[in-house]
Length: 137
Image 1 (cartoon, one colour):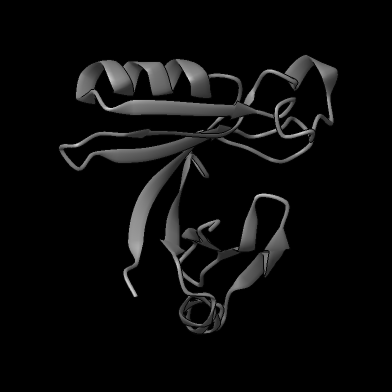
Image 2 (tube, rainbow, N blue to C red; image 1 turned 120 degrees about the horizontal axis):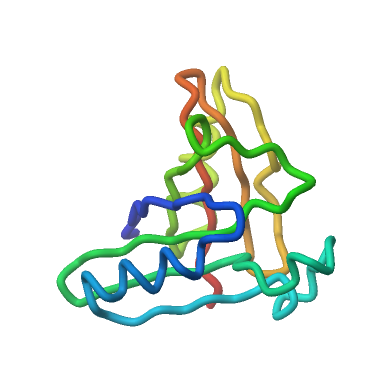
């Protein structure tokens, strides 16, 4: 299995602007899926906010970004990023999850999600937030 790690940047309403900026610097392709696109609008004022976005360039640059909804806590100085680990093998991602989750706080259990066969989020004992998922086939 091949596993990749990607820095995932958290914003509050500025994710699209950040993605456009990073695209202007590194090139590549940009994707932005809004809460409206995903059918996950919790606050009408945030419907066009980015639920999932990324810039991926041929030079190896890859960053993901999203807008943290207002009903969730967010502090730019405390939780402005997390590490995304993505793989194509559910068993291997599950093994990594089990190891990372030792002495961690599970924010979202590793389970099927609307956008991925497996998706989970935790904060490890060092305060680093991790997202593990299996790429959609």
